[in-house]
Amino acid sequence: MARPRKVSDPTTFPEACGRCGQHYQVAARWPDGPVCGYCYQRAKRTRGTCACGHIGVLPGIVDEQPACRGCSGVRLNVDCRACGAEDELYDGGRCWTCVLAASVDRLLTNPATGTVSPELLPMATALKSMERANSGLTWIRQPHVTAFLQHLAVAHAITHEALDQLPASRTRDYVRGLLVEHGALPRRDELLARFTVWSGQALERLPAGEHRDVVDRFVRWHLVRRMNAAPGAVTQGTFLRSKQTTTVTIDFLTWLSARGTTLSRLTQADLDAWQAGGPTTRELASRFLAWAIKAHLVDPDLRMQPHRRGTADKLPATEQAAAVQAVVHHDDLTARDRLAAILVLVLGQQVEDVVRLTWDDATVTDDLATITLGEAPVDLPPPLDEPLRQLLADPGHGRTAAHPHSPWIFRGHSPGRHLSAAHLRQRLKTVCSTRAARLGTLADLARTSPIPVLAEILGYHQTTLERHAVAAANTYGRYIATRR
Image (tube, helix red, strand yellow):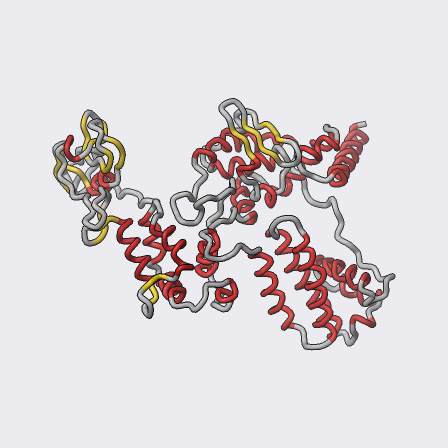
């Protein structure tokens, strides 16, 4: 993002710019008059086709239209001495693209061989061909990025395992994403890999013995097994839920040890004392207890009070309608945030499912825009279709090396990955609580629409929608009784 202009200062600079009319220091005098530093920079970066047919930098103005140097008489050096193309020059008479290419080659060349490793060539090519070369140069010139790329250049092998041995950092994850996206590394489920590493470290909090062995079995044969069996990649919600379950399980077994007992001697009194003596998150130990019962590790008659369903707040219908109107006519929200809010507020979608939508799920023509959430496409009538049309025209993150052929509707910052559900949920807080909005929408739809049809369209299981329908009917019944 460009820096905002300073306040115009006619006292210090009495001569006004011939282009913007403001008072700043004059950077050049061209045929159309004095040009301030801001307009000078803009002129160097103006590209297009001149009325004479010339394609390139158009720094001049003729008949109030951008014009090339030949037509406007503007004297400006924009000829790169390295590639010969017209472009804004950055260093030594070279354009940003040529300086970026030289920097990438320098950092990724192995000093011992004088060449770039074949595994790194696709990534190097992608970095050098970035549309926004200045952004790429700014990124790789950060000391920690420079050091990481130099280390990568001399690595004996480019593998996931080798990268895992390096200290965890955002730079490591981002470069790994680039390597995967450009074919240097095979794709893998990053959240599953992160959980595997994290859980191994978390187990160290338990002393060696019965309890650590049990938790290791629980993680391997229950949590990780369910992650592997799930269709598609592990979601952020599943990843966080598995981490929380593991943490609570470790705390529970640590508590048992401090109580002077073991899992094999667990009693109902122990479970009651565990739940009564701490926060409600202790209820999550019920997931471990259910597994332990199936594995014949504890008494099958033991019970733990489960988390109560249906206690979350729902957005009232009046607030729901107001939120939809605000989103549709909200100029400050990006097209991405508006589309996400519409899918939550109107179609009751979970944010975790929204961020995983791809362009294969959408169809946009001049007359119709649809999006597929379940088995059948859903029409988005005007003005609900506007954000989807805007994203199709400009999906974002297309001027760097992170998303060369990304299928995601909601592209993320990380290479080849969609937007984080947590990040999107945080952005939508200015509009509504996504959880309350989704539950309010589902309650209203389930009360007024046939459940089988609704399940097919929205991609929910019928049992889930039936539960919402029952809850909505009970609430409506209580309302009628109160009115009577």
